[in-house]
Length: 137
View 1 (spheres, rainbow, N blue to C red):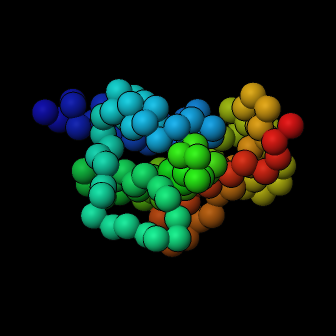
View 2 (cartoon, rainbow, N blue to C red):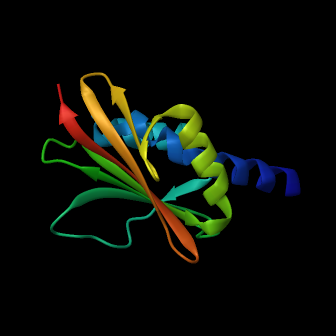
C-alpha cells in the first residue's frame, strides 16, 4: 500500500507540466486522458460556476487541485493547477527543463498553432501553475 501511495504521489507531483496537452482538446477527451493518465486525481463536481465552464479534479489528500477551463465550444483554453508548497521546487525544475523561460516564473511553448504561457505563483502554503493560450497562429 505504501508503494502505491508513493507512486501516486510521484505521478501527481509531475503532472503540472503535462497540462499543455489539454489546450484545444474537448472536455470529453480531457476526461478520458485524466482517467487514464492521472489516476491519483478524482473528478470533483461539488461546485458549479455560472460564469466559467471548467472541469475540476483533486488529489485524494486534497494537496492538489486542477481546474481545466473550457470555452463555449467545449474546448480547453486554460489550466490552473494548485499544489502543496512541498512540490514547488520539483515543478520549477520540470518547467525549466521542458519550456523556454520568459522571465521569473514565466515560460512559453508552442502547441500546434497555439502559443501557450505558463505562470507560477508561489504563496506560503501552496503554489499555482497556470497554462493559458496567449496567441493563436
